[in-house]
Length: 117
Image (cartoon, rainbow, N blue to C red; front, side):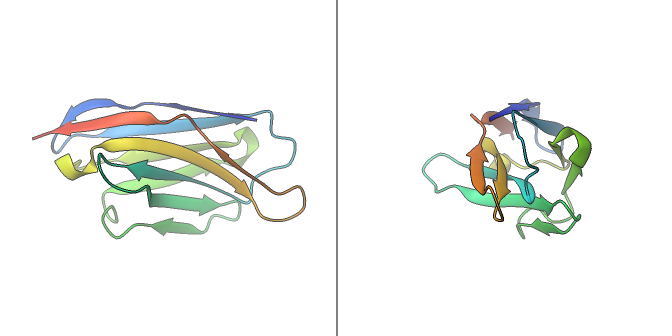
């Protein structure tokens, strides 16, 4: 199984970026996919998750600015990030998890997002 992220980069505060994560080699679909991030000197934290049924969860710090979406047929998850702030600077990781039969927990390699002030 491989999760390939794309869309990171450098943007000025107030700008936007869209992250994508495509999962390949998955035989059974994940129950949930999501995005996490790790800022320098900090622990990894949840950004947003979305289940196969469409239930969404956001970190309080990104509510109203970030939007997660998912294409179940393609096992792909997206993160639209608007009104970016310097504190959003981090490495963003994609996650695909299955908690039922044939359980797994896979991570992408991470993509850097840098927001300049």
